[in-house]
Length: 120
Image 1: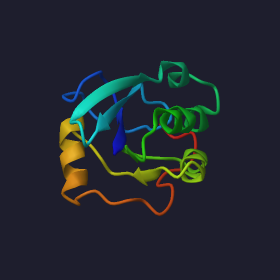
Image 2 (image 1 turned 90 degrees about the vertical axis):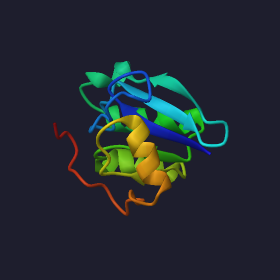
Image 3 (image 1 turned 135 degrees about the vertical axis):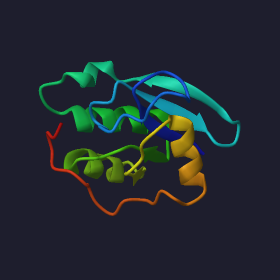
Image 4 (image 1 turned 45 degrees about the vertical axis):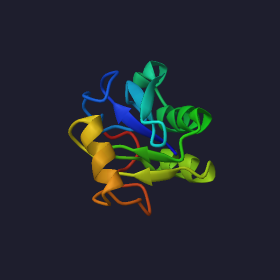
């Protein structure tokens, strides 16, 4: 399974970016192969609007079935749900730690957005 984690950097030691839509990158981690790649999201970093929806499309196109992030707004949450991508919020620290927390059941799938749109 592929998991997308919002990240401030380009490796597993990077910090989880708390903002889904305006994350600089997504680390795409393959749980079966134990490998990762980087999905660039910088075009949405400074978008005037629509960053969450565009980021959701990036994640969906990557083949991820789960996204792990700090927070997710309502439009991005709906777009991810429509693409059948599970949303996990509340992650912080290193990307590698967030992956392990998810695997061990410490991070749960969200039932709804946890912030309003356009928060910072």
